Length: 261
Image (cartoon, rainbow, N blue to C red; front, side, top):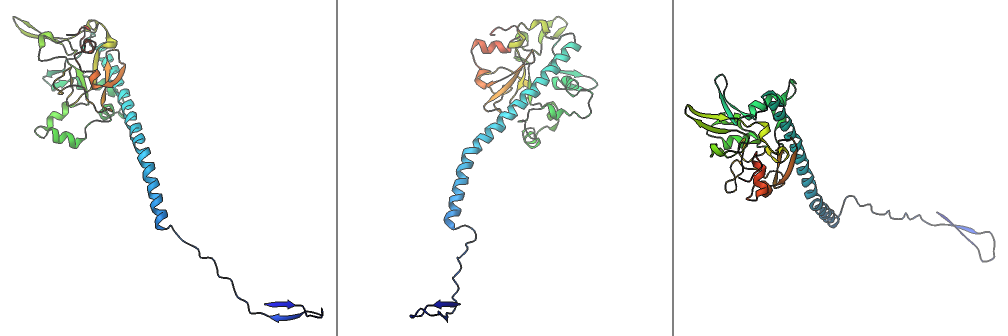
């Protein structure tokens, strides 16, 4: 590199050669330091802790709404069954010589599936239903019983008291010739909008009002509550204690005469 220097007499400057010294380049850092990495992980952990419960709650609510839509389809299927069977509600199960035991699930199946070949019965089950593995573990003693298993139960009433059964599965009348199963007619339901017909059940396709025994009672698989369908086909969600209690207003929901038996 050349440097111009002025002489003392103001004459033409002389040139002096100065060796070139390159400036050191700035050091470029690649990646994060350990502290930066730990800070980033901490921020992500905090965001996940904030967002994850909200995401899970949203997913659970979506399944509850999906279940309500499916249960409404069951209510419409029950409505069509009544139209085709002289306005008589189906029994819980009947014995048919050619088919063996036929449950209310089997009776409503044609009305749910229709004539479309693309529909499957699995489409009309609760999204929170048990998996095949869970059913196998529960019914290890009889795989055949799984055929009668459903995620929704039918308000059969208190079948331990056949003479005083106020559910929809009918009453038993005893005559000299023997017992006769009498179906409940639609006109006998005094308040269809306040009479439970179908709903989420714990462990069977039967749904009854029991306080001390959770068997056959409403489940709690939807955010601690369950969906219930009514005889007018509308669906409601509530906590289990609002479906099962000693309160008269709750007991009335299970009786076709709308009385707190």
